[in-house]
Length: 106
Image (cartoon, helix red, strand yellow):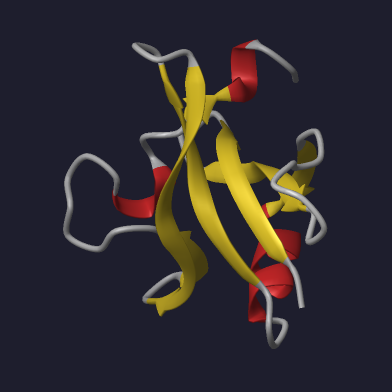
């Protein structure tokens, strides 16, 4: 059983999320690992593992600190499985609001 934070995404040329920036939360403290770039399929497998959970991790520009966001869940949609944070919220639905790492780290 592990907890994770997802802080960013990578997208393909069609703007479809292909990878996530995933951080492991250490049980013995409030610290987290550096981001690991994991595929969409691996993120789904990770969160489908019994006992694992994840939340978004959103940079708060005003306070210059990371804020724990919303619970992330695996959804089985019309076109297959994907990760979703806050259904029906136009600002944070489907993790589109997270940092786009495409231009930072290919």
